[in-house]
Image (cartoon, rainbow, N blue to C red; front, top):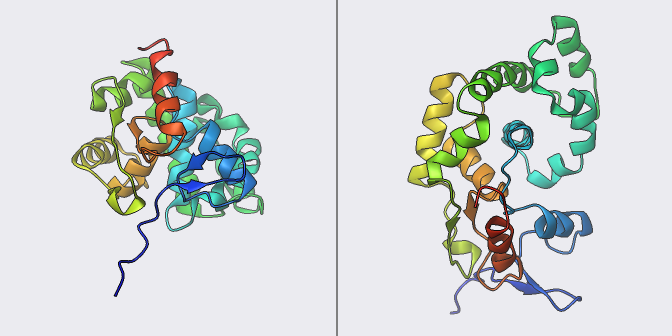
Length: 209
């Protein structure tokens, strides 16, 4: 009897080791290499990712990634000021847009989240609000297999509670941990993945560092 595969980093034709979750899908590999885990410090970009992760609830991220440009078109480039002012007619038009996920609760939640974003941004700043949960620096893990990566953590639970208390929707601790991984608040690239060190260098070269 042998142990089940632990889903370790896999070698790609270009000679680089990568986390196994993107497979060989070119769009997914590009997202893994260029975006996932890179520390994002810009408030508007963080808002967009939080909204898209909310739409992902119950779905796979690749399904959202393939519709991301449609989402950007439909939601005015994820401009919080514009979204916060959406009228009922706009919400109905979004429900007719086949290019996005047509979920009424998630669409309405996006409008509410935009208004909450503006409140936070006007105060301490949305980026500062989020990054303060990790003391302003990425949490760097050194996992060698996907089996070791948690679905949520005490930090993601704390951030999830805070967002919910403020009125955000679709922000459970598992969704929030996926968000934290994606925006580089947590570096969960497997230690053998070529992007593990690359994401750290990106943070070290950032303005916040």
